[in-house]
Amino acid sequence: MSQHASVTIPRWIDVEGIKNFRDIGGWPVKDGSGYIRERVVFRCGHLADITQNGINILTRLNVIAAYDFRSDPEVERQGEGPDIPGLVKHRSPIFSKEDYSPAALATRWQGYFEGEKGFAKVYAIILEKGGQVFRNVFMQLLTLHSHESTKSMIVHCTAGKDRTGCIIMLLFGLCGVDEEIIAREYALSNLGYWEEEAQLEKRAADLGVTIENMRMVMSAP
Image 1: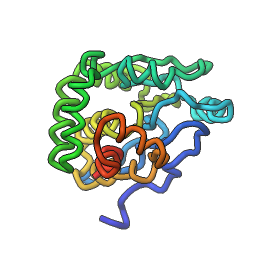
Image 2: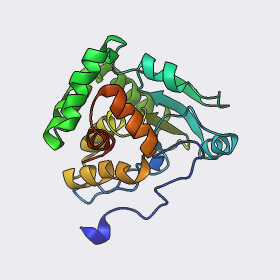
Image 3: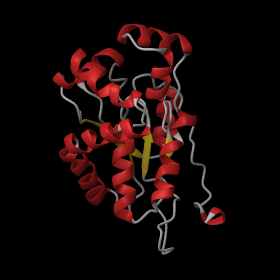
């Protein structure tokens, strides 16, 4: 399959002020009948720090919607980011404010510290809590992004890795993409998202965990 792994398109797009921004299109479906349409769905980290140059890129990509899976506490801490002409922001939190209490957050993050099996447990929670939100995204795709449309959309959370990764997994699965490719696309976040060492150290200290624990949380194993 290696020589047919994907259609050759620029997958990574440099949108100034946004981490982990990439096109999910170009990957083949497993029966060989086609591939995921490119330049329709982009995934990324939060948009709070986007610059005017970044906004100009989104305008050229004809992005008309951004589904933001961050919780209210995350938005309060990171910000919404500037208004972007022609783009509607859909606040779509998967976790409630209560889910971001210190106790709830510690329990959920403990799953990440357990490695791959722990990640799977956390992702099962995301899938359970995100049902209505994910349905809204699929309805947007069905109604506004037909084969004739040239419009595109963004799905994102804070890093564009976990909550965003779950909906991309669902979308690819529904489209018939092979599990190996779903895993490969997910792992690209190891290249696209990072935090400065000082930020990791501060967050580790705030949570009372090790820096290695924080690196595990930031990874896409």
